[in-house]
Amino acid sequence: MAKPGTDTLTQSITIHGPVGDYLWHENWITIPDRAMETDGRTHGIAVSRDGRIFIFHQARPAMLVYSPAGQLLDTWGDYEGAHGITLVEEDGREYLWLADEKRCVVHKTDLSGKVALSLDCPSHNVYSHGGRFVPTQVAVNEKRFGGNGDIWLADGYGSNLVHRFNAAGIHLSSLSGEESGLPFRCPHGISVISVHGRRELWVADRSNKVIQVFDEFGSFQRRLGADFLISPNGFVQTREWILVPELLGRLTVINNEGSLLGVMGENRAILNDSQWPDAPACGILKGKFNSPHFAAIDQKENIFVGEWFHGGRVIKLERLPKQADHR
Image 1 (spheres, rainbow, N blue to C red):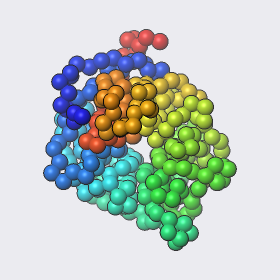
Image 2 (cartoon, rainbow, N blue to C red):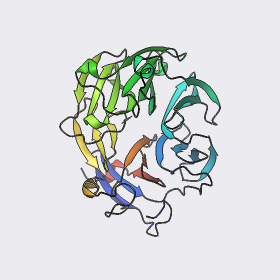
Image 3 (cartoon, rainbow, N blue to C red):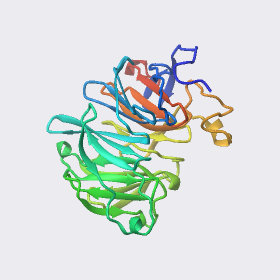
């Protein structure tokens, strides 16, 4: 399987999505060689105010920082289990929340990697009785958007819990999914989503193939997507729609109420491939996703997608002007 950047077919192609058309850039970056590589999976992605793209991948250094044009600007961080990354802003300053699934640490850092706060494994009964703590992503109810500053943490790969902390990192409560009658099965990604002025916690409950929605204090509200989701990993919200990367080969687009608008880059061939994701017979194909893990969107509504397989892959979908959309 070719590593990202080695494909000789570099010409971009156009893909059509439910909210517009995009140029698929297969090789907009080259991931550097890694002397101390773990497995190189490209997991988390975030975009800063100035357009820099932060890619959190399982290698050392774990953080790759690129310009909008795909130039490598910086590398930092010893996070062998690099997983979720969440960009937040406090008093005009940007920070990153990082979740490491192998070291089981959760750090808030500045954009150069200096640690400002850590979250410890909370004192929950499940951990006292042998339950594993394996953090996957952080969401923050940001004060700049009218939130209370609470920090939410998904233990998606360990004990299937979502924990609530205050802004100082003190554990307040936990969710198991039982509040809704459907216990979580891999609550992989979480986000605080704004819906008609309400702040809601959305949980990508991947193995249950649904989105579970809670209010900003943790009271269950509703479930979404049972009739169309196949493997939701997380969320990226724009002003008009929400992007849901799905691990099984597609991006799903929904509106703010959670209704399906359509899918992008769907690759059905992987569903029947016993060697997926690392050596699929269907190949690593332009215009089709292999294993979307997390995604980010910049101010121009360009989409950046990191994929889960060994060695990694990062796709840039460049949003075409609306007059070029075929809708």
